[in-house]
Image (cartoon, rainbow, N blue to C red; front, top):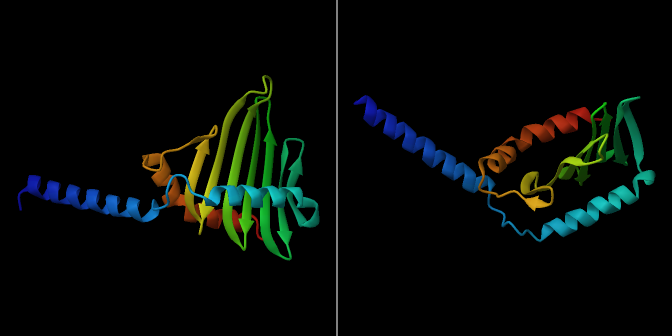
Length: 164
């Protein structure tokens, strides 16, 4: 077979496969009505944090990592880290054992300016919305699709790090 023809066939197959995969993981509308429900649930978990069992994984002068459980089920994980330049705060929320929401906030220690602020919303542990500085990340971007594709491995690591 002609090498150029072979190249175009392979390229067409890869293009088709990536289009199919993007359609598979990117099927939720941008203005998903579940987002306010997830925000409400995350707020309820956070406001009731004292009623959950706390597991302190690490704590020192630079930060901490805690997990919170309700009857043995992970409901929230929290990290905080501070060095001379940056404060890094992260929260991960779970409902019925499934990862539903995450927030990342990085702040400049000296100026108190926000360096990075991101929120991630999930349904059935698949990304349904991603916000950077309260601006929705387009679902059709390569970054969104890659993040959505890598989410399963990330969730597995998150669970493993927070096992009771």
